[in-house]
Length: 131
Image (cartoon, rainbow, N blue to C red; front, side, top):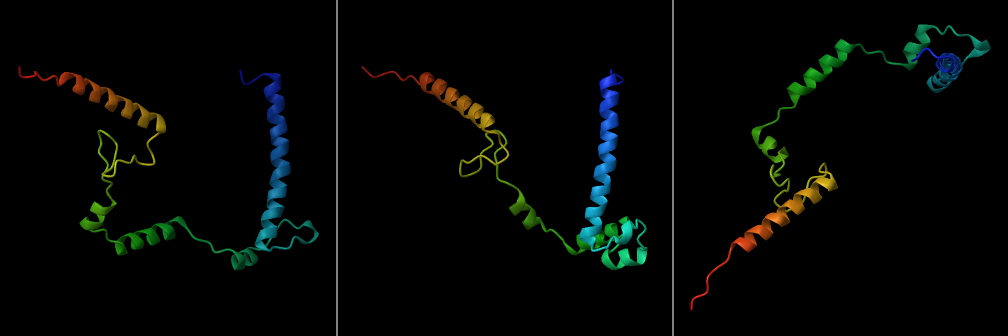
């Protein structure tokens, strides 16, 4: 289905757009980095780029993360404070509020269910009057 004439034409047009926008993006990038494009020279020496950009490798980033994780030690008290005190059944906290991530539809559904259960319990509590 992807080999129709229309899709081939669209693919061709997208390729042309990629070329055009790629050139514009490269010019914009050079402009933001402060690299002067004299006489439309596309080859820029790496020494000039090294002055503007700091190069880091993946291993350097991983090592930096490891050292940060070693420095940051989370105690059990911190974990208790981080843990939310949300009831898993009612999804409400100790103040009766729902968490931000609960959808309003879900809140409405839960509250309707709670109201129905309350009505059933109220009807079921019939007491006899003493004569």
